[in-house]
Amino acid sequence: LLRVGRRVLAKGAVLWVALAGWAALSITWAFVPALSIQSSILLVMEVALAVIIAAAVLHYGIAPVAAVFVAMALPHAVIALAQTAVGGTVGLGAIGEMTFNPDNPFRLGPQPFRPYALATHPNVLAGYLGVALFQAGLLAYTVRDRVGAMVAAYAAVAVLYLGLLATQSRMAIVLVTGVLVLAMLIAYRPRGRALWITLAVIVLGGVGGVVFALTSPLTAALVQRFRELGSSWQGIVDRITYGFPNTITLFQRDPVRGVGLYNLLERLRYIPPDPVSIQLPAHNVYLVVFAELGVVGGVLYALGLWYPLRGLWTRHGGQFIAGGALLAFSLMILFEYYFWSSSEMRMLTFWLLGTMWGLQVRNEGTVTVEAEQGGEDMDAAPSPA
Image (cartoon, rainbow, N blue to C red; front, side, top):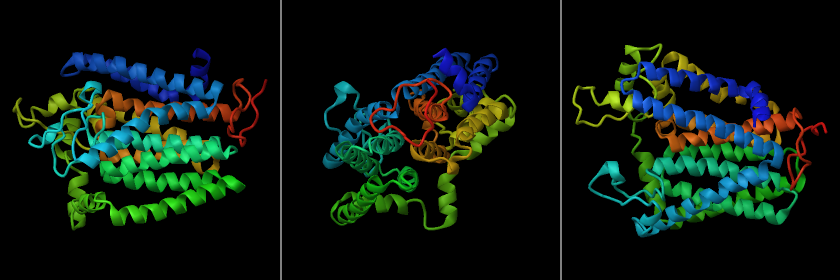
């Protein structure tokens, strides 16, 4: 792991190490230091997770890593579809399903019902399934020389995508659909049979989508969700910038250092000064990070996400799909804050980063890796023995 850690530093990991250090330093000025201490420990563990994922990709290939993530996500998609079918919970409280309370919008109660599986919110589930869709697409690409395995991977894509639609998370649906289709088509250039299978899946998926749209009651809910954005550009802007004023106010109070890691929600309770009221932060991860860790932390975070994407259009194969996943995620968090404020969802960031780092180092042949297994990316130069 230490050897892999040194290799991925040049791929952008050094930015995350610096961010973790700055976040730990914020303990000294945080409003509630205990919150920063806990979150700093988790952040260090998450950076370590990215290195572990990169090591797994380097030594075992991307297929098993992607398959593990897909296997974890599929049950959530199935549960979400079951919740949609019954219009509520399905009795899985023993394994973490939260109780649906129609009278409390902060406890999954907004109408109409939106499924959340075993997550804490439909938008959180959407982000999770969105990442899983790219992992399934990456899996389909790596096993492209085995038709049966490729078809099974695309079957997983179908289930995960239906689960994503069920969440009715607008930005996740738009971004994941657009970027994933584009990434898969570009990744296969020019890939003969595998490309034709992918095109067939897209066409069949389109036909199935039309049939689904004409027959499923979910269609009306999705249409209503998009209509809720507003009938004017101002209405759309107002929804996208929800929570911005108070978050920006706190950022302006200490723009260099911020309020301290994981302290934004606590500080928002006092704007206005009412410790009982609930204030939500800006639904934009970048702005949240700037408010918590100041310009220093915000710049490190943004660079850490976007640095691995440099030269994306010159890449091919698995790297392009993994890059597409990171790109879609980097855009999706412009409209949500869970993927920083929630440590378990923050791990999605580091899974994506670890996957990208591992593929970059593997394809550049900078370390000794195992021989190609199970349809691995043959576009990469062979690693030195």
